[in-house]
Image 1 (cartoon, rainbow over the protein chains, first blue to last red):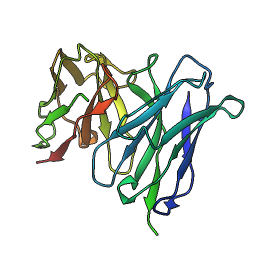
Image 2 (tube, helix red, strand yellow; image 1 turned 90 degrees about the vertical axis):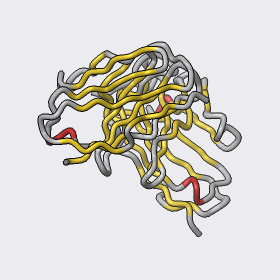
Image 3 (cartoon, rainbow over the protein chains, first blue to last red; image 1 turned 180 degrees about the vertical axis):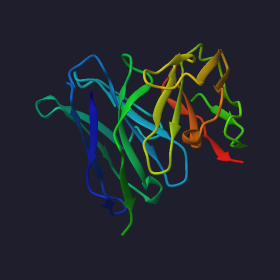
Length: 120
Length: 107
């Protein structure tokens, strides 16, 4: 069964760039699924960041679009998130997830999440 | 963006109770709705997709219904493992958006 694992720095300085990677195991990132990033600030709800297909096609949340880049590395079976010009409001648990059916879909497989704190 | 509003925000119930959570969309989303369960410190878990389709491995006490702008998640007989926070999510229109969550607590 497909499993996802996020990794990256747990602490990022304000105005810096947050960089995370999600490794896909037990399946191929080149399947027919799309792949998403979702975040959850402490004690708050879920926010969708964006999605990518193995072709490199992306869709982003307009609220973050100017600062977000999602990319894919098929050779490593992984996809990545970069969020620039971070501030304290970007402190959150970041999850990667698989979309269940084509693009713009439900999220049927989730990583465990990684906590990113923005602080000097 | 489509706004998803869940009610109640907190629900106190006892084991064995029938529990219903409501999710309302700010515009019609047909049946493009999913429900998730999240426990503290854990990732969300998919329960229901396309408003009423039960994800494989999810107990049959969970069910979903609705279309258009109003949806419900029902737990027919609440079990100890069900105390958690539940989120709805629409996938009719970009950006994907979630409801604010409903926390189901022990009464």
